[in-house]
Structures are given as structure tokens and as C-alpha cells.
Length: 394
Image 1 (spheres, one colour):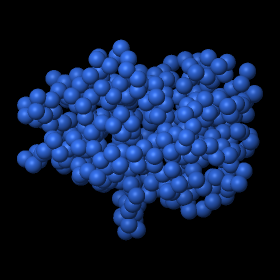
Image 2 (cartoon, rainbow, N blue to C red; image 1 turned 90 degrees about the vertical axis):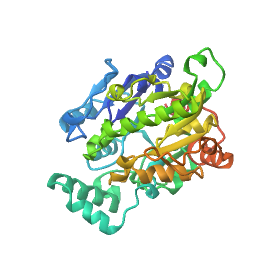
Image 3 (tube, rainbow, N blue to C red; image 1 turned 45 degrees about the horizontal axis):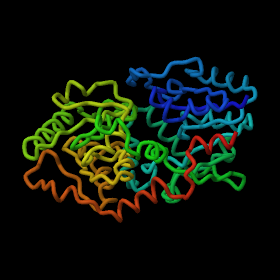
Image 4 (tube, helix red, strand yellow; image 1 turned 90 degrees about the horizontal axis):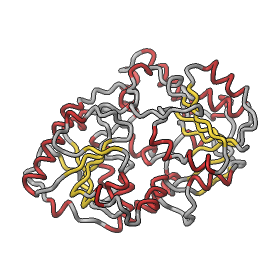
């Protein structure tokens, strides 16, 4: 039997079972394993938020240390393909070295929009200041990753990627370690964002449409509770953020009679439920909610893909908490501004609404939507799903 092994550096949740087509592969007589290396590659693992809907099953293998990972690679038999959904850095270096050592057929995806240097551009002085503000352990990790970014990965025992999924045209403009692993022998596959597959699944009218209909949908980013934020140790002050959101929702309701639905982040554990009272909170239904709303309230999440595909107006928002965030990789005010600019819009400070004009905010620049769709979501002609493309590789 053909075998497919997924490697993830984040907890594998029930949504991931559907998102990564596990049932599709099982239905096609493909043996599937999920390797969860979250604990191995996170030195502050104990601080991470454990998901309440973590997937269970014998097919999920968790790895805590390098010894167990090496044994797992040594014991591999009849493995056809590895689906590697991790970033390359000093914490995951061992995985890539073992993939090279055992001559394993595997693929990487080009990665999200925010891997572009435009989203995290910092001057040399800011980089130096960041380095000296870190703890000794974090400074060492930062220095090691800098070496990894500077020199060829081949110097670290990593060969070229066998297969590279180029998900969109924008991938050509990004700077990432993944692209350093592309060589003459690498097979390039022109793919698309997985959100496009979900869009195809939900674009037609169905019986659930009325259930998820609302005036506005807030796409939440689990602000202050997301493990990506916890890993970097930034102080996020989620209570202040969600208090601002509640006030903004009340403003929309009182002035425009707009009912807002809170689209919870798929990795949230309900931490914000007590902070947003009086408004529906729905999880794991982002495509359905966006499809059946009048407009979307958002920040810099890749879930805006659905707003673009379903041609929904977007209102980009921030408050003073976002402006205080220094780490450019997080959902800071600058990231919101840059995302909004892709649609010729300016983000709204929800703590200063005296000049808020809803009619103006709901206007769509269709050219910018088409451009975003082509650059970041669906750049190529094939309508094969990502899962179908992976199946053909086995």
C-alpha cells in the first residue's frame, strides 16, 4: 500500500483532518501518518496553548526529542512520499538533514504571503537592537538562524528539495530558505492555495446558507492567545483588543443596525468567548460565513482569501495595541496597513470612529481583487485540487 507521511510543527487539530484531505487519501487506499513535532521544535512548549479539539488516532505520532525522530526515520518502510509542512530553521534542521540522509521523496510548499520581505522589513540597526534585547538562549538561536539564512543549506547537510509546490505567482518575489533548497533536479509544481479548494466546495448554494447568513463577519486571529504570538514572547494584551472589538460591534449595531458574527480562529480554545458577549461565535466555518455575509471585518489574515474569492467588501481594522507591537512577524498595525493597501484601502482605528463612513468602506476595487486572486490564490489554470495533485505523486 502507498504511504503518505505529513510532518507538522503545530498541534494537529480536527480541522486539519479535513483541510489536508486525510479522508480523501484513506478513501484512495493510501496509508497515512501524521508526525507532530511541535514539542521537539518549541523550547517553550509548556507555554503553548493546547487545542481543545486536537485530533486523535493511531495514525498521529508525536515526537518530543531528536532520538525518537531518528529512530522513526531509521524504521521507515515502503514510504512513498513525505508532505513537509514545516519551516526550515535551526529548530527543524534535523528533519531536513534526515530527509536528505535517507534520500526521501518529499515536497514543500512555497509558503504564505507574509514570507515576503516587504512584510517584515527592518533596518540593520533595528536588527542589531533586536539581537541585544534577546535573552542569551534566544540570541544564540537568532544567530544560528542568521547563519542558516546566509550560507547554502548544503553546508548544513541538506540537499535540494525533490518537489516544490509553487502556490502562486507571488512566491517568485519572496525571500525564503525554502527557495534556497530549489535546484536543477527539483520538480516544480504550479499549485494554488488550499483555500481555493474550499471555495470550489462551498461556492454553490446549499442548505447551510441561511444558517450562516449575517450582516458582517469578523475574522478573528486569536489575538494574544495564538501560539505563534506566544512563541516570540510579545506582550499582546488581548483583553484590551477584544474590548475594543466589542465596542466596535456595538457601534455598528446601534448606528447601522448591523449584526456581526464572530468567526473564531480555528486554533482558538474559546479563550475570547467571555470577552465578546452578545454576538454569535462560530468556529471552523470561515468559508460558509464569508460566503453568506454582506461584508468582512479583518486585519492581515490569509483568510481574506475567502473575501476575495466571494467578492465581499472588507473593512481593515486596528487599535493602539497593534501599534505597540514591535515584532514585524506578528499581526501589527503595519501588517494591517500593508494588507489593506493591496486593495487600495486604509485600515480603520476602531478607537476613533468619528469619521467612519460605512458606505465608503463597502466599496470594492474589483481590479485589486482580481489582481490579488491571481497573485496570491489562484495563479495557474488547473482546477485539480491540491490533494489530487499530491495523489498523482504517489
